[in-house]
Length: 324
Ligand code: 5GP
Ligand code: MN
Image 1 (cartoon, rainbow, N blue to C red):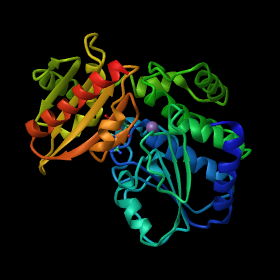
Image 2 (cartoon, rainbow, N blue to C red; image 1 turned 60 degrees about the vertical axis):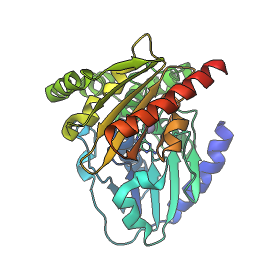
Image 3 (cartoon, rainbow, N blue to C red; image 1 turned 180 degrees about the vertical axis):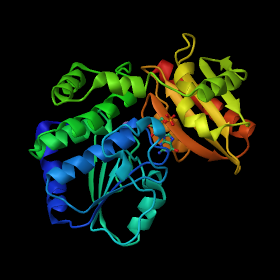
Image 4 (cartoon, protein in one colour; image 1 turned 30 degrees about the vertical axis):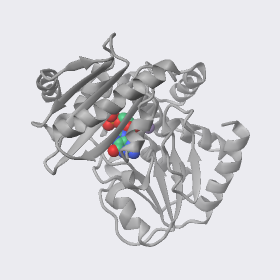
């Protein structure tokens, strides 16, 4: 999207923000660096715009490894009362906003939807959805500029965290020169790249590495799709482990998947694709979402039933995409 468009849609968002007294900012369940970075950065930006009544909420709170981010202690996991405006960040649909979004929606507030997932359902009254950005924090960087907000050190640190985590530290195919220019601006504003990488992409718990070991015992590679599955899951470390990010590095694979059975008859599915392949549409068909290179969903059914069904969809999509 061009700068002019950011100004138009950003202007509409700015008008809603200017009129609102009670604002709620929501990010997605099982939050990552972009979800928390976006929520905290927007909190700082709203305060710079003069807003004093801003609540930041996420069902699952701030993961320990992101607790270093400025403002993290202010995040709440439930909300009460009514809001004039809810700003939802990094969520491709309302369900991703979890219980805090559902609770706030009862009072029928206006909703601004700021996101970069290609599968976004445009559920807001104002939708600022930019699939060509690497992270929701990139959109917030551009909006802050359109709103005339000068970035302070804390805001820059939160924004850079989203860029780092969603690009696996600039290793994804969408890490362009334009993105690196934003990184430079954020570092000049005081963001500390080294502290962010050492606390996020360069770090995981010992338990998460042991969990990798158990998951990798089920590794399978068929028709260019590499996968693992487990029913003896460890939810405490599953998000931290993100084994699928390791799987997609297999030279022989174009797509990767992990299947983790939950205790309530569902399977958490994480998908990855090499450049030129797309897993977002597979996740979307299964009521999930994401990006062409990284997507996910939660599917009802037993482990083997869901894994076999999704792998069949992936192999078909891979064949079709290889021919396209
Ligand atoms: P991960 O595999 O790291 O959990 O997620 C990869 C991408 O897919 C992220 O962009 C995440 O937002 C998206 N994603 C993962 N699970 C779901 C889901 O259940 N629903 C939706 N809409 N998106 C998901
Ligand atoms: Mn994101």
